Length: 64
Image 1 (cartoon, one colour):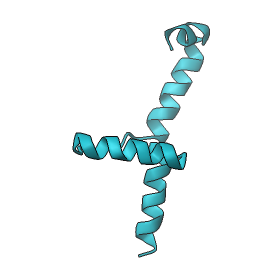
Image 2 (image 1 turned 30 degrees about the horizontal axis):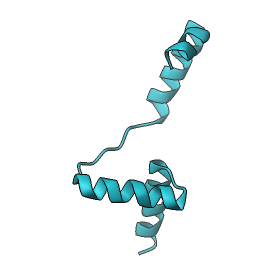
Image 3 (image 1 turned 60 degrees about the vertical axis):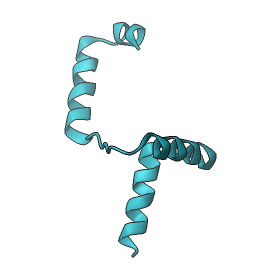
Image 4 (image 1 turned 180 degrees about the vertical axis):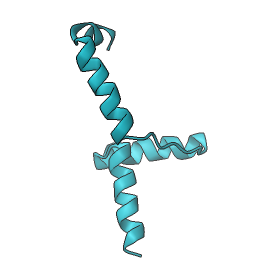
């Protein structure tokens, strides 16, 4: 990633940083290590990212 940063102009980096700060947040939760391992394996088998999983869970909760 460090090499990539060097390739991008300062203006481009500033834009990406500002865009990310304005449009995204980081979501985190503390879970047991065993649960994390199980979750990562399940997501890998299903071909889902962490963000896909959160979106899927939100959709399911809304339909309840």
